[in-house]
Length: 357
Image 1: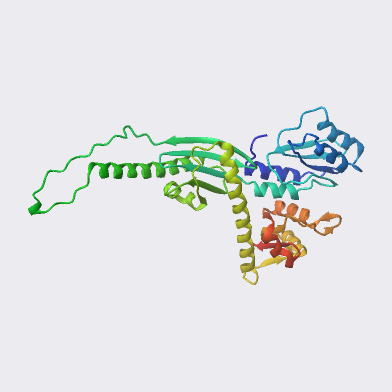
Image 2 (image 1 turned 90 degrees about the vertical axis):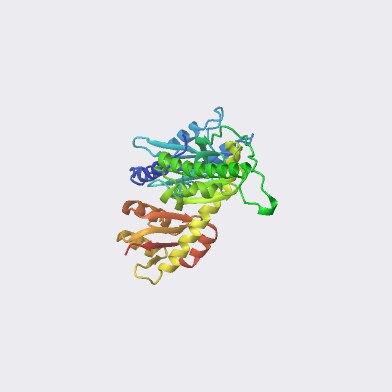
């Protein structure tokens, strides 16, 4: 499938959250290494399916038969109903870092999907030079070039106008040469072009669910583009790099670093907001049990939990799955965190929440 936009990801999560078949669901997260000629990922999948309902296991293995070519995408995610209507939901993604897992439970296992959708949230990309702009869309490891514009300069020739001779005894008056005037006009046209390009990005693509807009360029190019974006300028993250002639793959490689930085920075900001909320009027819920209780009361606006932690189970269901389920039911935001942000949640057993009241 193509790059999944944020709203499509949310729809998938809600669809899965509402799925509670009588026989349960087998959730499959399959990491595929296309460079591995031995196709060890097939062996790992078979090993992970040991102990799973035989009929369901055969259906899953049949989808990835040894004689069939590897499926597109670095990660395949599937949810397979046990018995009943034998319903299946599969998606392929161009993302790395998802470990191969197979989980049999009463409902779909959502935490890895939630992490992936959060880290892979759509980002707008604008690559600029002084006289050219390229617009791209990135989501879940896939990048697509959407548009581009160039400043048309009808003539790069310039003529220096000779100033009339002056009598040295009368002094010399200051006057701009033809070269200076041309340079000033060119600079003005470039800046105007970049500002207009920023406006075009917003008018044509401003309704896309971009979490951030990464503007890549040198000198004052990114600043000029951002100046034309109006209120959307607050989403801009500037990167000083010349990529205007780069391939889409090269741009994606550089962008991956920035997306990682932006994701971790956003999570750190959430932890800072959490610390400020503790003891405030709205307050915060601390620890999985308190988060679940406040979710049940509909008081939570944002759940934050360690996306790398194995949580204690309540009635056989991990607390992370329960938090996701109740957040989706009540319209609360959810952010699985990692790195330093996850470490900060350690004192709260890996989970906390910002409250509405």
